[in-house]
Image 1: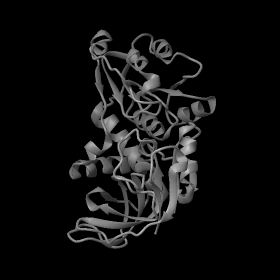
Image 2: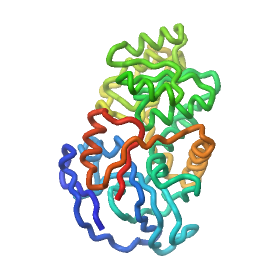
Image 3: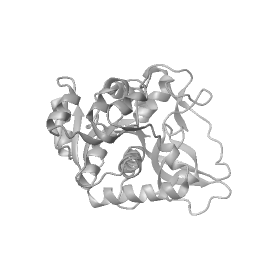
Length: 323
């Protein structure tokens, strides 16, 4: 079995594609033979050391889709041959892997492996942001940073389906077209415009109910200036670096704001919640309210190339690796 292994943190070049001995699945685990593997900016954080990794060497990746080829003791409700998807702890950049069964969800027949691998981490992130962190209602105005990115495109579509008006920030006219197609009514080219000023202009001073920010350092604290009184700042990523030196008094000064930094795996720790979130995601995908865009397909051996494109912000939609 071949997998990507990381022996030291650093640039994309630290990822090695090599043979790995995979033990039988342990109690409560299932072995998944991957048909497709999701690529996310989260993977970059672990590779660079921004997020602490397990003991090295380790295999990156938190998302995949495939079929069950072996079961450990005590696994119920799953059988050999089942089509499954997951967002789980590290280890997905591999031809096969053992996964705790509590993270596996059966993939509906109408959803392909490629779509499944591209949608779980991003789609479940969008679900907890839109339906749990701040429950978007019809009539809300929301700001989505990186609106043409993997999570951004899902947020735009789903928020529009909920009846919200979506303002999106993007880095180029090409990305603006993608975000507009996904449901963003207003687009801001953040390299050319002051996004906080444009939000005030677009909303005629009313501002937004919530800001969904996966960028981090480059968009803070200006994101707070986009919020109405009692609005919510939901930070879910740090693509430009982490937010540092957060002065809580800013929240009071800018309108008694709420700020939160949730993480997906806190939500997924409860199996019942995971199943509800997955059903919600499958529903909007199968109904057509949310289309999962797989914009780039690379072989597993080309993982370094996928990371380089992510970090250069050359990607739109989702990137997947094919074993």
